Amino acid sequence: MAPLARPATLADLLARPDRDQIELVGGELVPKAAPTAEHGRGQGATVGSLRRRFDRKPGGRWPGGWWFAAETHVQYPAGVVFCHDLVAWRRDRVPEFPTGFAVRARPDWVCEVLSPRDEKRDFVDKPRIMHAADVPHYWILDVQEKLLIVHRWSVDGYTMVLSAGADETVRAEPFDAVELRVAVLFGDDDDDD
Image (cartoon, rainbow, N blue to C red; front, side, top):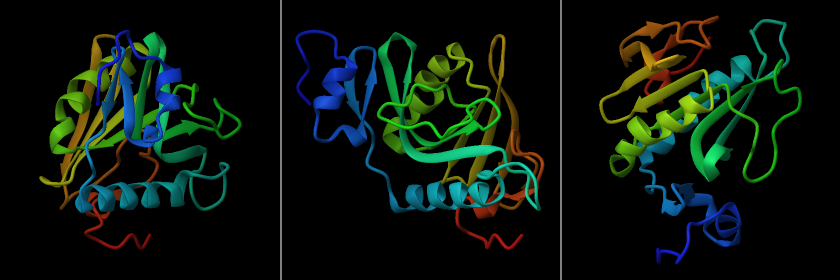
């Protein structure tokens, strides 16, 4: 990707035909790593499991109260646009499903599925920007090691509140109203609740 003679903007990102796999970070247009099959499976299994229980109005058998999306570009202050693997908003805070490119409503939960080429971005760059924007919850799924890492916003930065392997069943905030079998998040087990 040829660098621009000036810092890139959202308009530059919007003008690109391949914008779906590009992020805007520090005035640069940066490609996301091409996802592996394991990445796609983990992403699909996670959003499927959570969406079934939470992507609905509150009430009924499942807790509800959330909007979910995958591969969604979210605009943060300072002209940063991340394409998150998974993102969600609490319906009581964002009453209508956020739309457009890039979404401007701050997420309440972000989940990144680790890609070998994007580890620094997922562990360093994104958490710094999201913390400054007050995103309350940040998950990382490591599909190679079969790990779920759950972070919660705190004044000093994100605090890891849970790390779990595929053989565990957990209550992972902010979705701790139900137990989640971690293996389900990687597509390694059936989600038969």
